[in-house]
Amino acid sequence: MKIRVKIDEQTYDVEVGDLNARPILATLEGETFEVWPAEESAELSPAAVEPGCEPTLAAPAPAAAGGPAVDKSKSVQAPIPGVILSVAVKAGDTVKTGQELCLLEAMKMKNAIRANRDGKIANVLVASGDAVRHGQVLMEFAD
Image 1 (cartoon, rainbow, N blue to C red):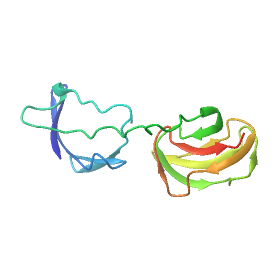
Image 2 (tube, rainbow, N blue to C red):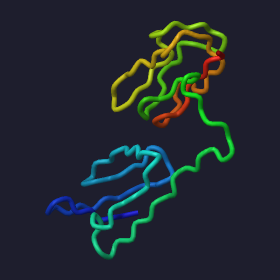
Image 3 (cartoon, rainbow, N blue to C red):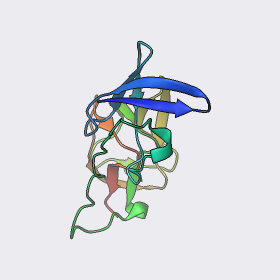
Image 4 (cartoon, one colour):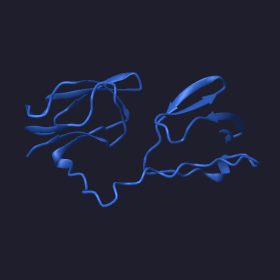
């Protein structure tokens, strides 16, 4: 999809890839950017789009209908979107607060994801190479 975006007095032609893909690829002046939109918002200001352009937005991913809410005290969630580079623990491992659980790469920076409490890992829900969203559950504690 091609859209024309006006910022201040400057107008840009932007080619936007599949809105259901993560990341969304956007090309501006020959350079391609990865865009990781927030899951909660799918709004586009009409004032930001030139007349004659009709951009459409994908509906946000539906929440797990009828599913149990995530107990944040029993899980480790991705603080930012990125790609898992390595996983340092497996189900059944006992971990201490601050222990590295996995390594997440975001914006070319490596981020150690550490245990937020002592406990036993019940489930590891990611593997090396997985792309993760902000807030996605990476691991769950048994207790």
